[in-house]
Length: 179
Image (cartoon, rainbow, N blue to C red; front, side):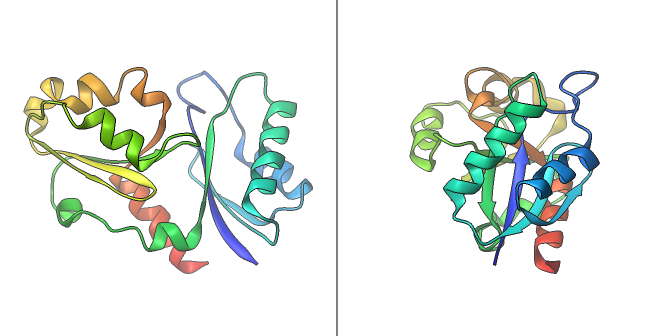
């Protein structure tokens, strides 16, 4: 049995795109996913399954389409992949703004590399990982001038990824190690 992380994009932000996590966990269990658990209310779930990943993704797509009247992009990542992701050496520093931007289906490491190769960086660093782009803004005072603010948080880039801040990412890693 394989353990997976499911990340939903754009749910429970303010009053838009409401997804009640206990209901979603129940819906996922009804399609055969096991040991379904969630962390906070922003679309971070773990589950186990013996099915192949493409079949799982199809079932999740069907469930989300059936129960929600808005689009919910998502990514399913094998637990082993997230646990072996190489983090940047600066990931544990005290910078206030650090994010893991997980690639949604159709987005690859190469897509990200091509997009950001010409960006002008202002007090920021990044590492292109296998499952996510790791980004740090060194000085919060300069945040409005950064590529993070001007490029990552705007279309079309922000539609290719689902963002988790460092605190959430670190907690997901901790939970992945437990299961």
